[in-house]
Length: 253
Image (cartoon, rainbow, N blue to C red):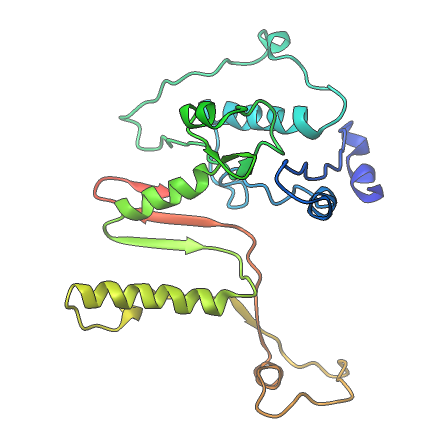
């Protein structure tokens, strides 16, 4: 925690390292494991992709932060909104449909009651709030629902930007099988790559004089050997974004 505190001390920011709060459904060992994890992978929308955020949605981002802080932030250091009424503009649903530069922005989350304050206590109340019930926990999976809705509405194309995982090859195989099954069901004989294509950012390193060379060579005909010979490596992309085009609108997640 020394690095974050040193970084933010000049800005008078309070930094809090918050663990995951386990739900009631796990074992003692699972609870210990969950509690030692950081919550940095909780997701709330297009922050990684630097999409526009303003209007009423900016307030949703604020409310999300308040829910996170009240659940895990320790001291109650939040400034009551009523104390800021003279210096801020309150939320407004007003939009200008004739302005083609206007963005209609909504907040979606992947988060549970272990990391956010104020979630309903019962499955019935959760269902009325549009949430789902997990194993002794309440979950907001609006990101998943938004993806499904946008994919189903897409008519022309879908573009997904995701970070690379260790099991990505199996995921690609599964997706291509789904595309092939859908084409077969429609009696269409085409290359599935016409409907689903993967692209990976990469760079090619130039060999420099005096650079380090390992004492042992990789196994012949191995992926590691081919990577060393081609000197091409993947660029890790942490952002997650989807662009879909329906009949009348474009959707970015």
